[in-house]
Image 1 (cartoon, rainbow, N blue to C red):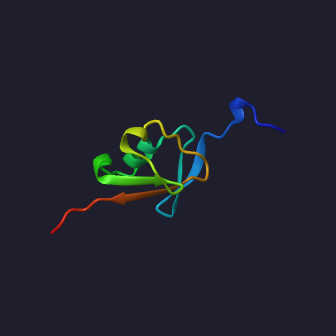
Image 2: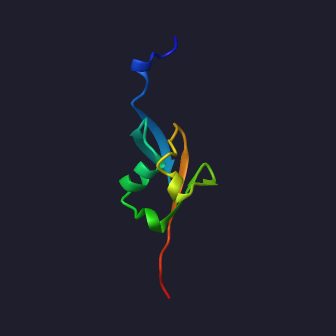
Length: 77
């Protein structure tokens, strides 16, 4: 039996740097970066192996099963 709109899942499961995360079904990549407590300007993000530019993260809706990798830039010298 197909799910009615009112019965659709309110959360989805994704993997972030190899760890399971449960997020809102309408979450964007920007939401996940913020939830991880990361500075959006200092992190590179890939979804399913594809780089997502910073200005596109707010429109990039996460889907159940997505694999997200976040790489934080560190300074030093």
